[in-house]
Each structure stands twice: as C-alpha cells, then as structure tokens.
Image (cartoon, rainbow, N blue to C red; front, side, top):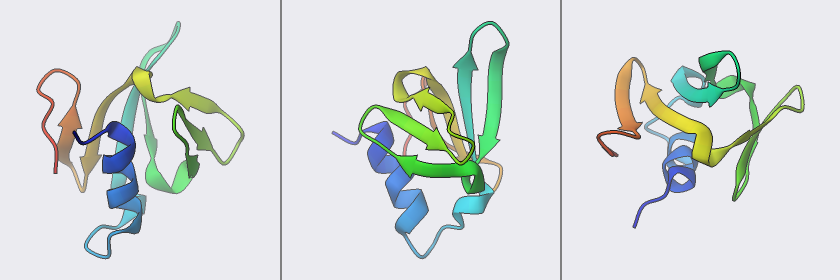
Length: 81
C-alpha cells in the first residue's frame, strides 16, 4: 500500500519531479483548506510534514497533493502516481 508519505518522498527525491512545483493542501482549523508549496517543506516525517518555519502539519490532515497543477493524490479519490 502506498502511503501519503511515500508519495511525498517520491515527489521530493525522484529526478522526474520538481518538488518546488508540488502543492500540498491540508485542513487547518479554523481557517479551512490551506495550500503550501514543496519548497516550504523542511522534512517529511512518519506522522507530520514539517515546514521551514517550524509548523507541523499532521499527515492525516492532507487532502490533496498536486504537481505542476495536476492532482497526484486526493483524499476522496485516492488517486496516486
């Protein structure tokens, strides 16, 4: 089974992808759905994505991952690369 973490790591480390072109949308409370870019990501952990500013986003809050404007994964459809 491919996990969200697996998808993010593939996008970050595979030479076919530019991680700065990755959009990660997540549920933030109380703001709603927010989006960050791959170049804001410091680390991809087992339970969190850590941003360069120290913000920790739980992986279970991710709702969509896109690369170059194309959806790679979303929570509803479970599409993946």
